[in-house]
Length: 314
Image 1 (cartoon, rainbow, N blue to C red):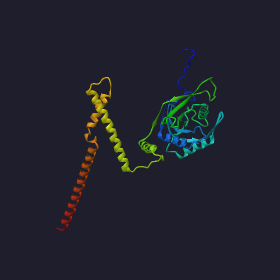
Image 2: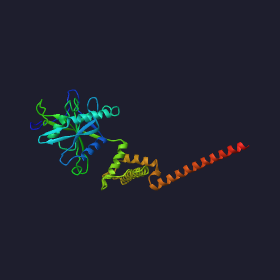
Image 3: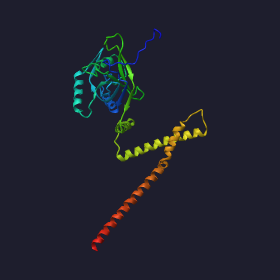
Image 4: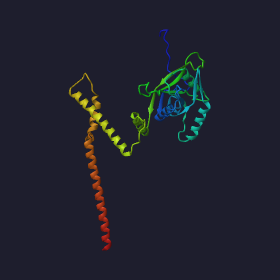
């Protein structure tokens, strides 16, 4: 290796020897929404807002799951940062008491920020969350960066997670000598959270940035339309694969033949569910069958009542 080249390996040590550094991060959607809610209350003079990440981790410290967050007050001035230490402790202790037995095992995993800058102040805050009194010690804290400036980020919310690795001379604990090493993360959400996020997403095109909650019937209609749209996309994919196979076009692949065949077999299992007219006809047929069963049941019931009365008279 040339003398002018320096190789910085991936962080492999945490706050205490023998404890591995985090390798994978799972972030629950609820935590992301909480961070965005904090960002909406950010004052114009603040460059960023910060807060504490809560969740669970594996015994060896390689897997982290961020479940919730809470805001922490701070101020940045010149070359120093002031953090509300007592407020951070009080909020953490309060959450432990209120969530006892329901979210047992939630511990401090690290901190978040609504700025994507990995600057001197980020090193100072990360050092704070590495301390035994206030942070994730003896495990390595993680840093979650969520750039809330959607306009600057081309309309996308970017969630990045990092851990730290000390660089420089051994024994130097200066926050400046900190290398932030990116860690892969995954956003997870349940079906209920997905439904809530879909409702929130409908407000993005509304001038008032608000939307109404649909009734059960409207939700059913939306779900059916979504399913029909997916079936149409699958049909289009299958047709493209068939056309590509018929023309024997080997230079331009439209789709995977094996996938197309599997999807075609799946569609053939329910051929009546590929068109709106067929769905309506199937529903009406089912409705007529149900009404006929109800009519026959009422007829039998009336006949039994009449037979019982005639038996009493005789």
